[in-house]
Length: 138
Image (cartoon, rainbow, N blue to C red; front, side, top):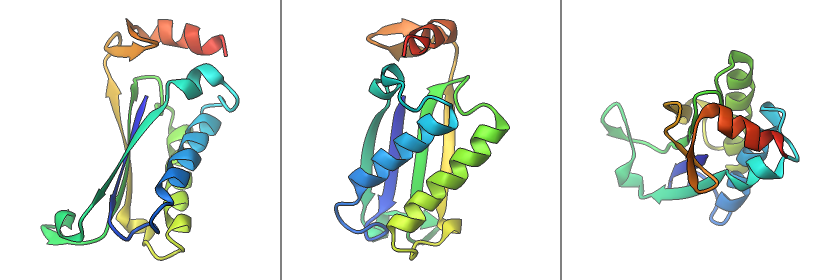
């Protein structure tokens, strides 16, 4: 389940991107009740994009932002309580790692859901039910 972390350069101190990915991954697992589930952890991937200040915009004008985006099966990040808890924690992670400098209102968290069966898990296309069965193995 890929996490894409996109940052305007300078939002986080250089080198803290890895810590951000680790903390956001842990928060995702925690809010889904999957802390310690190695099957799930192994299937969370991430990539980080740090963009120059002149390449990030709000309202058509340059600004410094942070974007936390997940691509997940439709059952992940689907419950409102999970969304609220995780989104708040992910926002706080970026804010805290920025030294409190990055405004929370310029940290964006979103999720993109895949259609059932349109997911590659453990090297093969799986339905939501098949993925849940794998995750249940721990």
